[in-house]
Amino acid sequence: MPDLLLGGIVLLGACVQWLTGMGFALVAVPALVLLLGPTQGVVLANCAAGAISVVGLAVGWRRVRLKAMVPLCVAAVCTVPAGTWVARWLPEPVLMVCMGALVTLAVVLVMRGTRVAVLRGGAGAVTAGAVGGFMNSAAGVGGPPMSLYAVNAEWPVREFVPSAQFYGVVVNAVSVASNGAPRLSTPVWSLAIGAMAAGALIGRQLAGRVPEQRARLLVLLLALAGGVSTLGKGLWGL
Image (cartoon, rainbow, N blue to C red; front, side, top):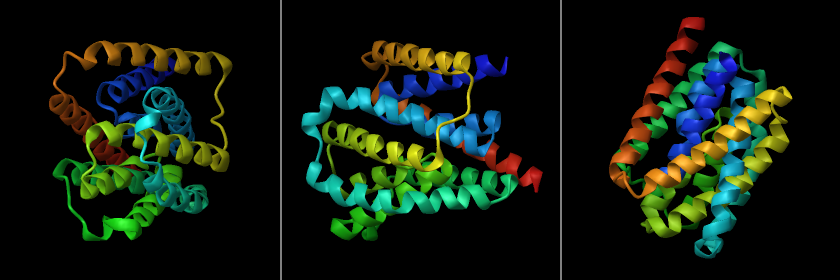
């Protein structure tokens, strides 16, 4: 049953990622953390999100804002080790409280489309990348700072999605190198890979039928519920 539940979580995350261009980590990380624990849940999410970003980038790489990606990615790479260190040394209940709080805060900020002066220009790119790298390796959710930077920079969706995928490839690869690969059996790995493929197919089929705004709202509501649940479990453990 836990293995099937894991497969369902990965399938749902992959589906919403292909459906909306975002959301795998926000949807999947809280559930994976509850199922596998903070460390294994985060590194599995890093692996899956990175793989999905690679596939998506193969289609839209020409629209990546490479100039803007340099400070974002360099800053993120520099802070990934700090996130790994924090995740290894914090007690599990405290780490779950931090993860739940980060996910919940990130979702609220993205839903509000918050405009932040510090996230503009070159300094904004460095700030967003640094915070995103830390959050990605510590909590598995490095996308929201990148999303907030794009909102403040007024990027069009057609350029944001491939740029976010490029960022996802780099940051998740470095996070996996820093955290290590998840310790899963071969059957569970096979199930996760199959779930990613199935989720991608379902997401592509639904992409033209579900309004983008409604799909994004659903993703954020699922992520908010997961973040609050993780926060609650961590507080209970304390």
